[in-house]
Length: 304
Image 1 (cartoon, rainbow, N blue to C red):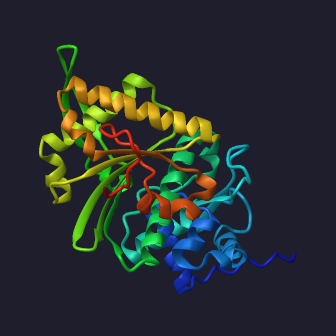
Image 2: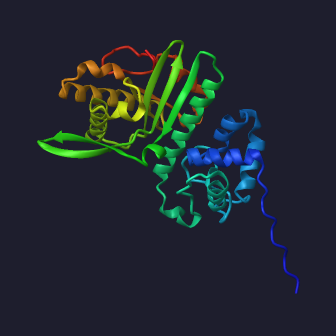
Image 3: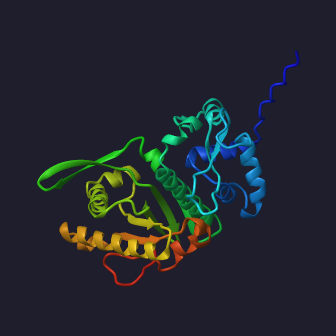
């Protein structure tokens, strides 16, 4: 009786290890993200092939370094998404000393929120695009980056009083970045909005960020006193995105008036991004006047 030979174990190259550590950091990635982060955008066929090899060559394969899957009718070109698989988690724990306390289980796919995964993908794309943009410039340096996944391990709590009742909220920013530009440093809290929060919930989100800063916990956490609180929204059409930006800006203005903090308008920024073209437009986010501010009728620059 002839038995089929067992497949040879995959031997990881140093570049494969870089990919696994990048996926560990960002959790959900596409080939385009890895190409910008570790290779070049023109290397896309090569990057796809390498990622596919780590994922076992098929979607939702078990016991692989990466798990590959698609979301039905979400992203326009139905990009394949990669996240950490069982073997990838074991490798990072055993060989790199990473506390990989999460990984993707293919058999649990039906329980995953597509909206949540899209939020993760937008966060990855924004963070990688920002890092990629800074690497290609001499006048801006990204000094530090902290992502919600790490911040969530020690969530910060703030107390708010609403309708004479005290409530406790967790504050977990999507990302915090510290930039150095010329002789100045700019700390930015980035919040990614997908239009899922209605008026009262969004206003509560803004109130919690204000309380986080006023309480001193912000400075205690990040080690700097100043901050710009930036909201980036996305959506299917330019009309929707523009309307959402104006709405968030107006709601924030109302919160500042309610709290008698109109002079805080200068720390808030609002703009829109498009997932598919983010790598092309990332420079505008940092260089062009594309941000609304509650205390200004004109569009401003992020660091203005």
